[in-house]
Structures are given as C-alpha cells and as structure tokens.
Image 1 (tube, rainbow, N blue to C red):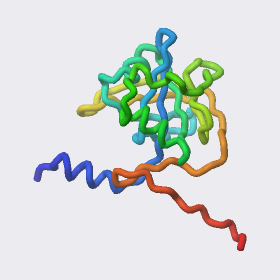
Image 2 (tube, rainbow, N blue to C red):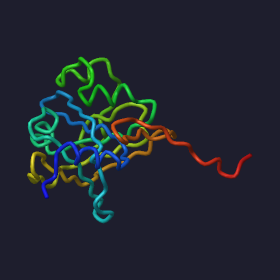
Image 3 (cartoon, one colour):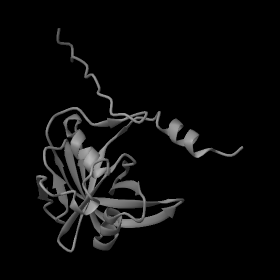
Length: 169
C-alpha cells in the first residue's frame, strides 16, 4: 500500500503542534522561519530539534553559522507566524524589516519580541531525512517570556485553547 501525499498531510494535520520562530544570524543579516516540527529531545544535555526544507535561506544560515534561536510564539503573534511562514508578500530576506527583536546573550541569534519563551541553540548535528533536513541543537541559554496562550497549529488552522479556571468561580 502506498501513501498518498495529500492523505499523509491531512492525517498529520490532525496532530496539534505548537508554533515557533526559528532564527539565525549570518554575516550580520537576520533570518527567520516558522516551524511546527520543533520538539525536545533530551534534558541532559538539553537538546532540541526541528525539520526544515534544506534550500531555504534560514536553514542555510543556521548551517553556516552553527547556531539558531527559538522564539515560542503566543496566540497574539499570528502576523509574525504568517510572515515567517512566507504567507505574506514579504520576501524571506526582508522578514525582519520593521520587527522588534533582541540578540541572544551568548550566541547572538535573534529572539523575537514578546514571545512565551526563548532558546539559544548551538547546532550539533544535521542529517538528511527524505525531502527535509533534521537540525539538532544543544540549548545554551533559555529565557522564560510573557505569560500567555500558545500559538497552535491543527488541521491547517490556528485554533485557540481555553485554559481551566483553576478552581475559581
């Protein structure tokens, strides 16, 4: 039995994920993309990974610089999500124009403003996996951000969550 691409995408779309901005700095130019394939791998040492098309500018910048940032996006960052996902008229090389961000403390990668949290990662391994590349990073620094609801991706949409009322009411 062969797996049809559309059926594969539709089935995996039923798995809810968080959404992050993965960023890099190469030759003093910031790069960024939206990622929902981000996951933790290990607590000791702290390792995370994500998957990317290998030919994008951001992926190439990460591989060239050996470092990347992860900004965990909240529900109020839909426009940033769409911009970094290439869903606007903004070219990939111009995605940071007019955006607020800081440089991470150790590796200097971009951290987007007003996120739920940030990770600063040193690239430790990559490997080809079908039409994607897997990028494994060791977390060098973290910072907890604003309190808020996460930006989620499910079934091709960005649903909101309802927090429990913590026994109030």
